[in-house]
Image 1 (tube, rainbow, N blue to C red):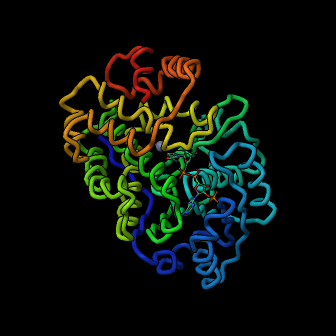
Image 2: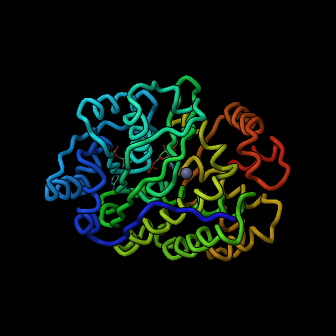
Image 3: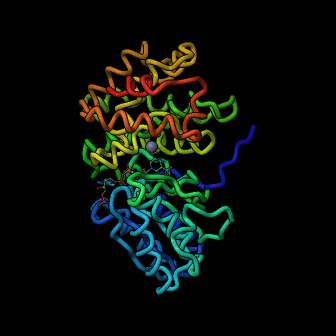
Length: 358
Ligand code: NAP
Ligand code: ZN
């Protein structure tokens, strides 16, 4: 059994300002990587630039990361990182800019390589240090070694082959205040899926279940207020915390079938990641072969049974309509993906997978 979590995490109010020195000490010039608008509105970008200015560390900003970032975007951003001679990367935002920041840190540290090394490379490549400031409560990318990019030529999304742990994660719940209800719901369901898929995973064990169990207890604390649209400021910190622990959980086990089934739904229909995963999560737990284990998950999350859990998710997310042909092709692709199937501890059929959709 292995427990390995090298990212240094600070989770507290005002943490970017408080830990400015540590942030700035990651290099001599920073590349800030963020989305188009949100970090300007929620104060995270000005907190980071303020921290760097106070420490007299120069920076350049790339603020054109789209949702579900593509390999092409990463390559465009790395040109700026190289031409500006930056030597560390600060990702600010949801999973999209955080994942992009990892891939940019890899490509910028290897200027002679082209984008094929993102996926087709067995060699361990060096990469620049990465710091992450999450502003959504779903992916846990600030602590995971994964960077999921859109591969247009394959018409899907996939994590790059390299495992890249951020050096530093700075979590402040106040950045969630500007997030829409839809963003909070979708991203916290993503964190929930990470916890459940990690716990009910072939790779789970008593050691790494410390993360998934603890994360489920944390998630249970705000679940009713999330459904009732009655979240408090205190909840934002809890949601960010649950999402970070969920990231630690999947770092050890990886995800399972709901994530595997979600990618084509996001790629083909543009359904946000958390919502796409959530539409398979209730069915996955209801059909999970070891119902004793599933019952433990329900207990940690505070649901009487898997049926109620499924109903809660349907109520929270609404119905996601997926054309039958897409669902068929999606399930067939998962059946053809041994890496994903092996994370589910039992035999499964294509029909079982299709039945998981809400
Ligand atoms: P996202 O794609 O990063 O962002 C979604 C939207 O939320 C964007 O429009 C963004 O605006 C906005 N936003 C972000 N923070 C906000 C805030 N505080 N207030 C208002 N709006 C805000 O969403 P995400 O669900 O966090 O990330 C999804 C990506 O992460 C997917 O690509 C998924 O595959 C990946 N993922 C990675 C891991 C991992 O371990 N690395 C795990 C799960 C998922 P702007 O564009 O203006 O910033
Ligand atoms: Zn996810």
